[in-house]
Length: 222
Image 1 (tube, one colour):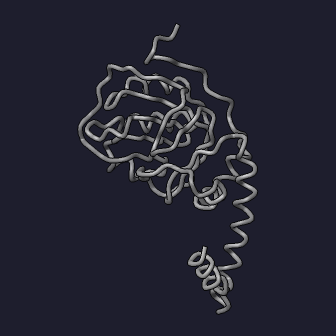
Image 2 (tube, helix red, strand yellow):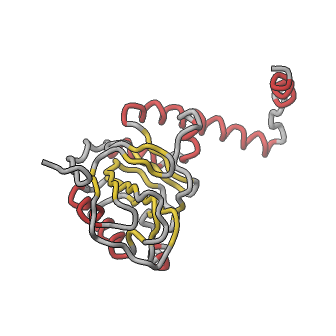
Image 3 (cartoon, rainbow, N blue to C red):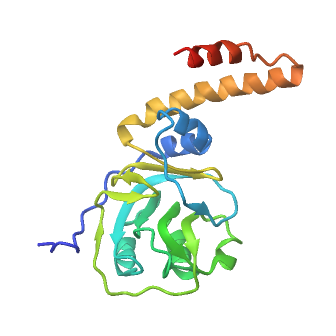
């Protein structure tokens, strides 16, 4: 029996490699626009060399400033996963540094998403292994627990469920429920084509802005 605060559940089924490859080719902004522009994590920043990230969420909720559950969560990670850590946004203790990030990469984890602080950013910034976090501090973590694995978590203001698809780039992070992934990809591809046409029209000097004043008038008189 898992006591409250220490619960552990098996990792959710993984998203296909083909789907993850398709997501890496699309900007997070395009994917987000096709989720009503109301989803996405805020307040987390990339600390790595630019590289698109996509993977299946393995989630951890840990006591602020404590990383015992994160160490345990590595046992639940598979190649193709993204480890998503709800550290309650605590900034006074780093939840991990270069050693844990390097170990995650060695497991085939596609990236780390940490609602908390990290350290060893000088080393992390030299690599393209995706590490997103809220802040930096030299102060290290405790290892006392408690913590829970593969439970719903809140990271950057967004609820993430085990098995959600996590995507990230230089603009930020997004969690996509597995049932919505194909629809979001299709919409993002259509939008990418539309934006390519708009950029081409700017170069040709024929960018269409005829909608601006009529739209303003509708908003003013709405």
